[in-house]
Amino acid sequence: MEPRKRLIVDMDGVLADVYQQFINFEKRELGNTILLEDLNGVDEVKAFPNGEKHVRQKDFFRTAPIISGAQETLKQLHKKYDVFIVSAAMEFPNSLQEKYYWLEEHFPFISWKQIVLCGYKTVVQGAIMIDDHFKNLDYFEGRTLLFTQPHNSSTHEHSHERVNNWEEIKRLLL
Amino acid sequence: MEPRKRLIVDMDGVLADVYQQFINFEKRELGNTILLEDLNGVDEVKAFPNGEKHVRQKDFFRTAPIISGAQETLKQLHKKYDVFIVSAAMEFPNSLQEKYYWLEEHFPFISWKQIVLCGYKTVVQGAIMIDDHFKNLDYFEGRTLLFTQPHNSSTHEHSHERVNNWEEIKRLLL
Image (cartoon, rainbow over all chains, first blue to last red):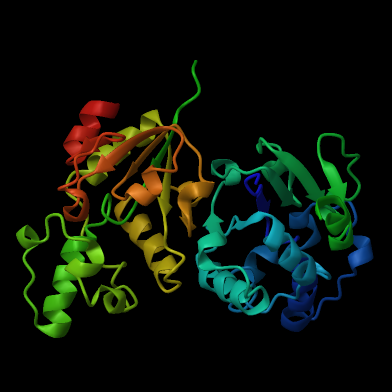
């Protein structure tokens, strides 16, 4: 039997819908209405000028919505691949526990052994990486899947395979 | 100029003196006196039957003593190597923030970008790993340094280089 391939899966923007959460916090905390359709091709920092404040607020990560299809497809991928969830969380120490408990609640089949909270992702290795940021995919040695998010949507991508949703990931990897 | 080699450094048992902290908690919490010299060759779980309880107590990791020489030598290594601190912390979610703040206090030259809190360490790659556990070193592809701790002290080591203290690490790597 061939060894299972290691699959590295990002959290924010791939499992957790941080765009929707930023929009929710802008509305709730500051009364601002931000429309998702206005954010295509806009850098995240420009899209959410108060983002730095929101990510440090209690429950920002703990109550983030789940990206559609992630639960069902990741559960299937987990049976076939050696899945690791890798999140660049270290910049926001308050997010560490929140991210752990969020995964425990929504992805209970993922064990603590499979979770990596880090700074730079250059230190992780695997066969396949799914991420929405070039800064992570560009340094990865294996196969790279770029998950579409508004900040990367207008880039004509050549060096990574683009996936627009979890349905497409399912078709590619299962 | 050659690229800097990536050096993976463990926390518990290499930077943080968890043996002394277990002894401190046993005394403080339960009134038990445990002598370090009685623990040579004894598995950690057997050495500290209440260890599982202590590691879940508040401040166990936050107030851990520092292993002698670690601060000075790691600061020098940090100038020469691409240092990552990698700790298998995920089993104890309460430890995540404590470990971050412990590093920030005692190793302020280490940035959040260089910290990895994970489950299994098989997912990290680098040129050199310093660790006190075979379960981590055995799966690492680069050069492996076994840091002496009572639980591994009576093993005749052949597949990894043994280092007994930070002075020896300094001589080997600087």
